[in-house]
Length: 317
Image (cartoon, rainbow, N blue to C red; front, top):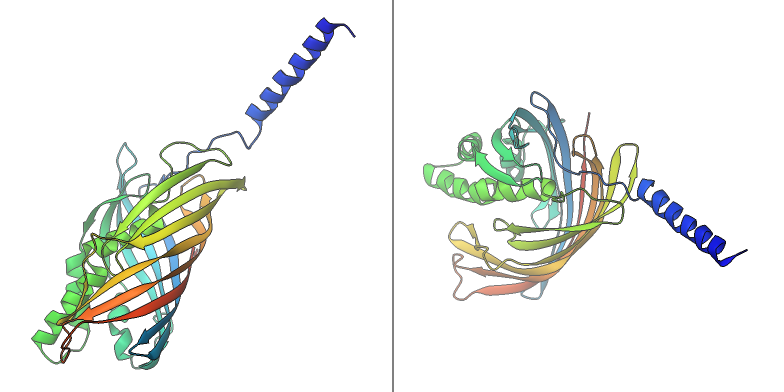
């Protein structure tokens, strides 16, 4: 074989390899974004199982808790840029808790004759809702109707007087206020890359949670594969304290957090709509809680905490 023939052969192999790579599924790029349709309703079932260990003044105080919601997203309109105005409702609620105050279980699909006191605010969520504007990358740019929802919940819970109702309303706004709702929704939705990605590509998303447990989430996503119209995505997250977060008000007391940890898991995203069909995440975090201002306290009290959380999402039919 002459040198010229060898050069032609090698060159042909290189060109063929490049063409094969360019045409292979691994090299094809896909746009992962919310592409919701006006008039359609999408559902998400969210379940968080938490195992919390605390040691307060030398005493072990452990608690297991499960909180679950089924949300319906009714898409009312979509603008030319893909921003969707949605009416979101709580279709059903599950609340389970096993801790120092005993066991509590509530399932709105199979409600007990008497709703446990600890579950009344969750039970009152069923049928309530709010409005969101969501970008194609899952960012929530507008929240409406949360205050009205909080008022309805506080009215549905039996309380001895107006002062107790006002205190509960403030606590509910900490848990279900505009900032809390925006954080909750973006944890589920703000996961998409800014541009099309191929298998093996990574992208990052940073979330700032200021309500509840104030934390910063540094998310790194990787498109692991594609199958049957689904994008299979891995996620690894660094959790750290959010310096912009405010202490949680609990009546006259305040509770502040200094927590850090990790999260990892997998997501299955429908390529046609961008809707998450399934998500499995595991979190581990630890740190310190500090309480101040509680009745009878002469000085702040702090204690260590560690938690393991499993978060599951799917799209029920």
